[in-house]
Image (cartoon, rainbow, N blue to C red; front, side):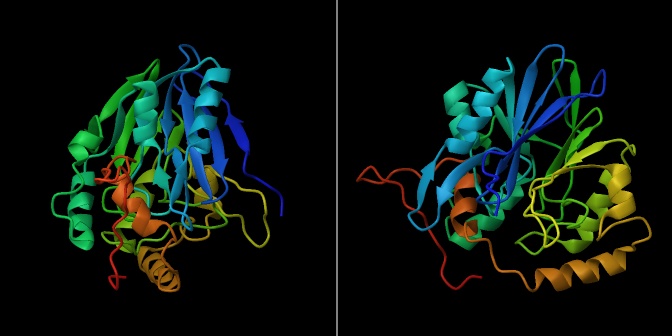
Length: 302
């Protein structure tokens, strides 16, 4: 199989208000990290950057985040915001490391507070996950911010998690794990707080964006017929070709298909490690008396 570990693609701006977008693939988890930049001012955001993690040794490293910073430097960009779309279950987020390294503020959706409450119970850690301290901004549905000439808007997009958000800037939408590439359909909705019904509603709101909107998904793993990872397709392409939500699909059929598929899926091998880190903004648990951090893994809860 071809090594896609260092695959990067550029999706150029289409005009005023439209960002230059780079996708950087992280092959171990099939994740796509994004840099979106204003073509005139060269001011940029980083979205869903990965902190590398080896589940066998419980060791973290920063190769993927360093690739993102190298791209930003090589193209003469200025990083203004570190964004995540949700507390990821399949990889650790690099938000904390990036904030410490660059001094740039980080943000995530406001409903992360509810996700944290859910996982405090699952980890039996009632005092854990101070998300207000871990993130500089918790963005509500409809919250906007500017990066150079780009006007970003936050869309609440629950379903994959109860607090997932989509970031829209001009003709670009960063749709996290709500949609997958058209030949894969949609992402799972069976994690705690997830809902296939809400996922459908979120997808319909995304597909109501203009047909030419470039949608950038959070993951791709290839298919039996396609080896190369893919992550960009327009609203029009999804409406014509997406295997789960193409035009003519109804909600009942989607929910039935999604729930049947989810019932066959195993938990991501990083999930129980990842959530306790990501609800700290990507920081490891506080070091104990010996100076080391330790993960807390619930037994027989899943």
